[in-house]
Image (tube, rainbow, N blue to C red):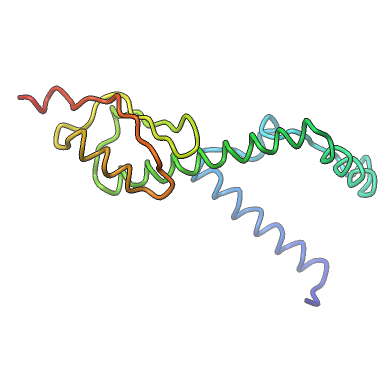
Length: 148
């Protein structure tokens, strides 16, 4: 691709803006929050070559490799949580009193109260149908209003 440096910069800035908006919408994450990052390098001070060398050296350490595995698992769990939450909302199950968590990859845990218009078994089956869900631990109860 033959583009000018100005065009390339504009393309990068546009893509960054799209990704920033996606992260804010999907995960309520402000990507300008430095606490989200393991490493921040000021390339204006260090230069590109020094920054690249630092990154390569750090990437080869055992602690970073272990951290990468943990980060990948966290992202898998977050992705599954968002798919389950989307399925619950799409099926009009009011999740206000239902707490959904993913304690480990493939496992969804429900606590709290299930909408009185739904059954515990029905909600559990819906969640089991979400791609990636291998097991549902349901400690949730049907809302007391369902008994009236």
